[in-house]
Amino acid sequence: MSSDTTVRPTPSEASGSDFARLSRKIAAAGLMERRPGYYALRITVVAGLYVTGWAAVALVGDSWWTLAVAAFLAVVFGQVALLAHDAAHRQVFRRRRASEVSGRIAGAGIGMGYGWWQDKHTRHHANPNHEELDPDLAPDLLVWSQDQARAAKGLPRLIGRRQAFLFFPLLTLEGFNLHVSSARALANRSLKHRTLDGVLLFAHFALYLTVLLWLLPPGMAIAFVAVHQCLFGVYLGSVFAPNHKGMPILKGADRPDFLRRQVLTSRNVRGGRFTDIALGGLNHQIEHHLFPSMPSPNLRRARTIVRRHCQELGVDYVETGLIASYRLALASLHQAGAPLRHARVPA
Image 1 (cartoon, helix red, strand yellow):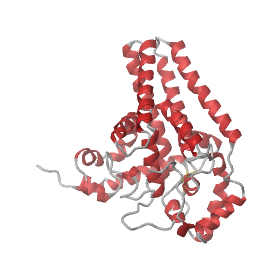
Image 2 (cartoon, one colour):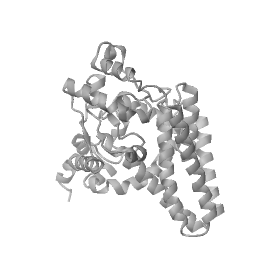
Image 3 (spheres, helix red, strand yellow):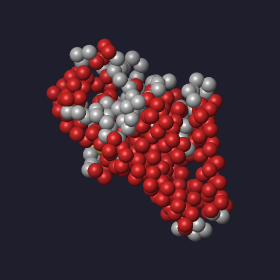
Image 4 (cartoon, one colour):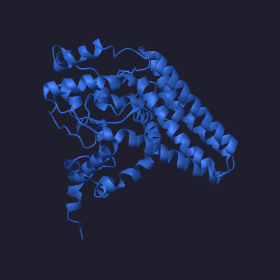
């Protein structure tokens, strides 16, 4: 398992390559420099909102208005997850230890196993949208290609027929899935620091439930968990869905050079500063995949350089609006499930 989620091209890929020339342009523009002031402000604001949210739960107390606070904390948890993502990529701190410590603290704050997520995300960055190598394309509940649909059994076969219509409703389970997957990964002996991850994970669960059951009646506490975790899942899924879904899927030995592997499988989302904040900079997905350790506030400036470089090379650079990106992702899911809709239903 990699010690961080920064994926770099091999020396043979980088030496004199199209990516190497782009990398020199990016470095010359100073876009790989750390942004300590930005991250100090962002961490302070998100931490303040996190504390404010839980203080509001205590102040509102035994009232159904507390569900509005649950919705607020769902967004805050999403922002904490985005900070954990940046820390893991060494966007915040250059040193490995500082990145791991900050990433684990952020992960513990939302009930996410840092080691499990880091391993999974590293493999995704190395081979984005590769049917056999990208863990994000594993057909555990949905099918991402027609080949997966033809081989599907159980829930993926059942859900796959109408998965485009079920996608956003299923995102309500993504927050719970994050916790369950983190806990299940602790059984993997190859996972580094799994004891520490386990202690932090179950400490979060214990504190989270204790605070809610102490401040709220049991029924209201259950409703709070449902609203909070379901909206947290929808927010997380909405951040990551536009990035690769509906883009070309690689198979087998189909593994182009580093630049094309990252650009051709990724999609940018157009928007202003609010989009940058809401999506944590991941709307600049192409630039993020090419330069994972680039601080997120620099991605917008990098976009101009990367897009021009791709135009010079004749490499497709895909960028759409946010709603269009969801439409393309859903259309791709619908197409992937076609063999299941056309399959003969047994008598």
